[in-house]
Image 1 (spheres, rainbow, N blue to C red):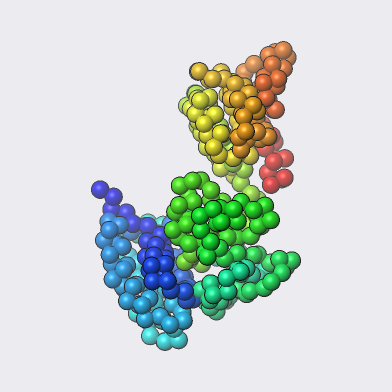
Image 2: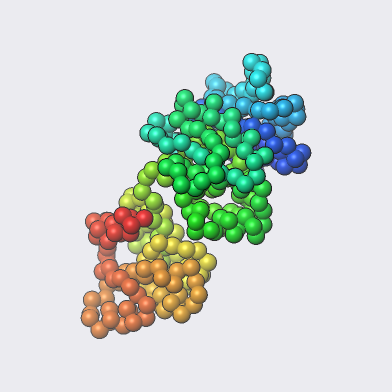
Length: 345
């Protein structure tokens, strides 16, 4: 039985469900003073949800304009502290359980830019306006509404009023690739099942640490997404570990057929394909992808092989391979090889 509860996800889910089912829109600020994105308590999720609802829903029902929830650690677990509207009264609820955290976020980012909230549904802006008062001193973040896209700032576009195909079309719009997109928790859940999420989608209601993580990705080098296909598990693991040490996001396939299925449905920055795999060689995968309409038609297709003959290598390129690396490959070779794509991203 699963006895672990992801505290932040459950809080966001309870608040998001309440606001959606009750058709409520007000300012919500969630501050996570644990300074981590992953906060897990050894409590069954059903129990955690029930206790969250018992504490949060009556408080949310009494809100007129704003709701502030702060999450802090205590000796026995986690404390919820909430303030409603302009009241100075703080209501506290303690959850007891073994606390596990990981994925810490830097709270000392040098962010000189404002965060501008874009929306064509002005009523939704209310849920972000008061965030500024609670985050500016800690993170230097400001929220404001404007009509022009030509600003030197981080842009957060509020898409909570969209759903279905309209939301998907907006998320896929090339003109909005530089924006942070704000979607509801339910939309995030549905989109994640279809693998349509990017690093720049924020689930509402969101914690300040969620936003900081996204802002951090905007200020650092983009991680390359690489598919590694190799039927030799030791070789596959070694390549994966080396690429991850170089800052890449790695997906693995154990044979050519699995690699083809993944590459037919998910976009990658690079495909690293072992040549001699049972059933389907790496060059066969490349040939199939070139002949089909897939997200990786033009993705660089790198063959990993011990073949060294000029004629043999030429045949690989004729089938759709674009680059060649001789096995065994080293970290130094991989680092030099992927650097142009890292710089380009």
